[in-house]
Length: 214
Image 1 (cartoon, helix red, strand yellow):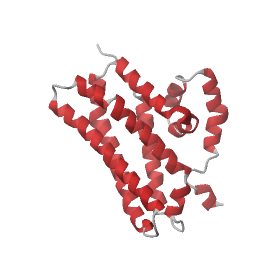
Image 2: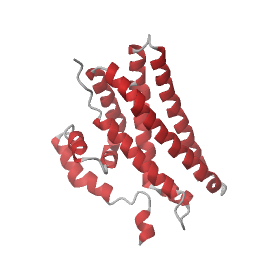
Image 3: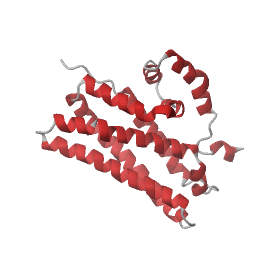
Image 4: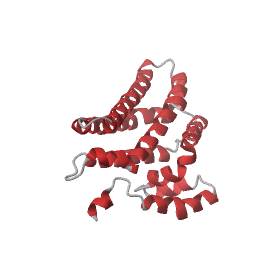
């Protein structure tokens, strides 16, 4: 019998991306605030983009190619993998367009609402598509070793940004998910998370909400 792959980190990332997509949608509808000004300086926007880029590039380079080899004689499954990559590319294009709007002239504000709507809709649809179809396929086809290798490459891509991304990733996660993720760290890293990384994240006003309330 095949053992079940541990997808705690995958679902934690998806939940974090959904959480930040909700914040992003609210930024463009916040009364009395200039969304362009907010996003240009928002740590939340940079954390969102960095984490999403790490996640998608790790999948594109270390997960889908492996599955493509395993499923070479299954055209329908290969079509699904192509859809995953195409959805990644479409999301990347919208993010680039948002950054161009933020850096551009005043008409960027007129475009921002539609662009963020497109990003939120595209991302949430992609995450649902992946969870409904791609993750069950991974469970059925990938080995523990292949899944572990993907996790290693994902972690390597985070690299020196782990003090910022890990507490962001675990914000709002269940106690079980937090415990499972922290168990993978060395003891010094767990201590750093508890006493340095997470307090710094909690103090971060990543979407400029506290400034507006004061």
